[in-house]
Amino acid sequence: MVKRYGDLYLDTRRTLMKVEEPQDAGRIARDLICHVSGKTQEEFLICGDLYAPAETVAEVEALLDRHLQGEPVAYLLGEWEFYGLPLTVTPDVLIPRDDTVAVTDLAIHQGLFLSEDPRILDLCCGSGCIGLAVASRLKDAKVTLADLSQKALAVAKENVARNHLGGRVRCVRADALAAPSPFLGKFDLIVSNPPYVTAAEMGSLPGSVKNFEPELALFGGEDGLNFYHSIAENYKAALKPGGYLCLEFGMGQGDAVCAILEENGYTILERSRDYNDRERAVLARYGGKEE
Image (cartoon, rainbow, N blue to C red; front, side, top):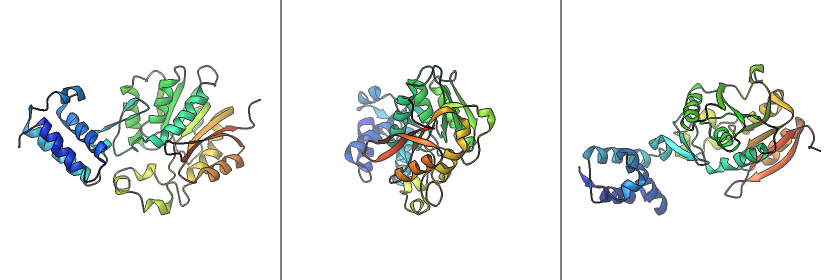
């Protein structure tokens, strides 16, 4: 079926309003059509009276149907933006969320006060969104992206290349639930958004998360704290003396995560909130506070 681009947009937006807010429905409709047609947003705005090829209409409608079945838009597009960086995303990695800006901001701010050419580790990196954001803002930082999943590391490597950061960012395989290999070396700062969903929460996740995003990157054990225990205990070996640890955590987990850190010899320096005013991240130093 052939349609004008303007009509295709209106029909797509109208259907999306069954599951999205009106302002989101319009944005998603535009993004889907631009993705399929290869047009920029500027080109799309001036071609409303032009006819879209039947193949374009059919592909947009197929993607629309997949979204109505719960598949996230980011996976339909194969990309998402985080901290101003374009990132490839696949079902092998979590979709970067605004929640994660809190821990990223903490890491970048602390990075400004580190010694020259700091070494920074993004542990459980997934798409690499945190580490790449850090590298993009701290021009002298050497960043390592680490994940257990080889498929996630493949996505992270693609994002390193996509953002032209290969000179300062490397990707390695590492298990956050085990002691780090000595080959990793020592870091001035470790930042991590580890899996923290509890067993009870796993059963009540929205379908768009439970059915499409990787369980390996979500499930944090019965109480959601398995990774915090391991990172706090094991990854001290990968920190330079007086090094920093920056962690994202789930809603209501702040006190428990801070207690784990303090039990392992860390001093809590800052706890921060996300855009929804929910406590979301902590910065700690191994050892006492700086003089």
